[in-house]
Image (cartoon, rainbow, N blue to C red; front, top):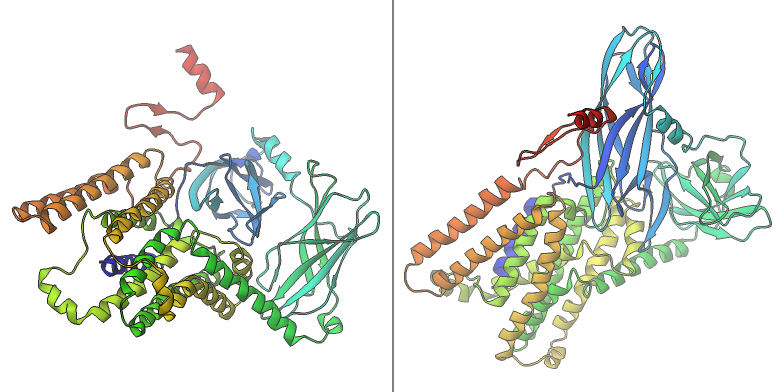
Length: 612
């Protein structure tokens, strides 16, 4: 029974895992602001992508940190207009579960200089920007929207209503300070590709907060965690770790020096480029033992994190399936029990190798990799929610998953094959449910892995998979320990039904995550779809599997319920294959289906409405 629906899960994962579909949420207002309504040929006009985030949500700086992705802006500009690089305001440093990220909360404005050619003819210019950003709260989703603005070219410049706003945000962008007395020197020891660096500068007043936010680089990686070292009065000393790339050790570091007198005081930030001494002149003898120790610590963290994943809320429901498997196999040959344990471990490892391949592929594509990234796929979430609910109904006994009467004879000869398939996809299910959870000890290993080479990523993901699979394999390899489990009996059916409730709770959690991708009303529509699928499952189990008469009618009703739920709810009501596009251009007018016409706000529009 279990092997069949777990094979279905494996098929869903195979179809959905490689895809990365951007998600849309109603959590951020985005608009394109210009510093001028009218500009002269040859002028530079500042454009600002103004992003107002909902409470509790954040997006990311140019260097997102251990996870996340920076906002990207792709311009569509007329001939004679060119866009410069994004000017980033100072972010906030966020530390959660051992991962350090650089984020923006509440509101941020990303500034871009637009340079006008000297030979531009007078008239209006249409400016377009496609903005893509990652936004996180309890889960992370991708947003994208198209913004537009009009700039007129003429003889006399005219500032816009947003000129003051953009001027304020420009003051929040740190400037490069080549004279700032900061120094960077290599420290020891060298652990393989990792090497500590000491950052020091004079800071009158002994700031309570001092940090260095590194700029991103393709040639090397600077850890985001910072260790503050003892220093004399008016001095700051920090230690960070640099991981070299294929090009060797860097000769300079670039980033932001952060000073803050107290936790509540304003941030003083300046951009610096710190020259490092030539690596060859300061390289100490590399300690092979230290390098092995550093790697072994991360492997141990990965293994312990995978071990603890077995009791995390995301994975706990599948433990019921494993316990039922232990009990049902307690009287079988030890060799078969061991074989099934190894096959289960194989399913876990194959799934984690797939996750490692995803991370490597995303890195090669130039994007940030995140743990549980497939849970940002709204279609994956809808199918996963439906599947987990069906698993719960199956445990409740609403319907059974079997091979059918004609296949029962063949099934007796293929017991070993069926058992192996069930064990394999049991491991796949455990991995699929584990990805949105971050267990203790897992965060350091994942943060380390995401910044490493492909080989190191694979090794650490294998260590996590071994940790997740080890309890099952251990019990399978020592059948004598199975005698401590209760003997098979009638209680197993009640236990199976009771274990349906954790699965149902998991389905409810997945429903809350999935509904966020489709707007506020999607709770109702997705819930209605699940009710229709559940009713179809009940009709199938009660009248097709256990009934004797009118099975054809029951099959027809089942098909009608499923098709009606799919086409009416998923396709027609929530458009599940096209997540809701919430972030629209600020001048868009939305016509509600019930007849209310929403107009863009402006003082003139308010005055006109009050005059009517």
